[in-house]
Image 1 (tube, helix red, strand yellow):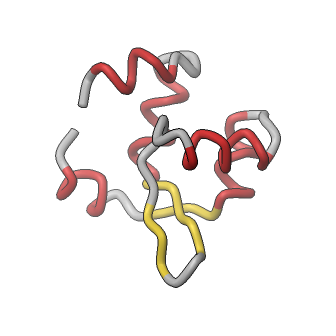
Image 2 (cartoon, one colour; image 1 turned 135 degrees about the vertical axis):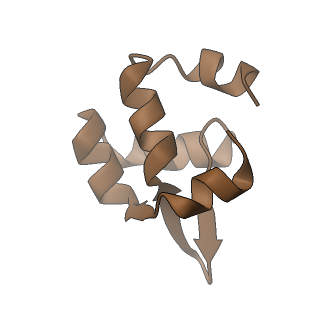
Image 3 (cartoon, helix red, strand yellow; image 1 turned 180 degrees about the vertical axis):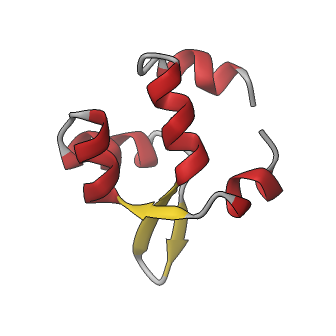
Length: 70
């Protein structure tokens, strides 16, 4: 997935991403810190690309496999 494709899909808040995935907010922040999930940081506010979230849902949260596709 290209950066342009990620940007075109829009963004969600960390809490929304966590709720959608059924995980804790802290897990999303850990993935951001470990660079396991694409994110946008605007003045300390993190957003997750909607397309990246959709891909995580489709791959069954196989984060390592998602990383390998980059």
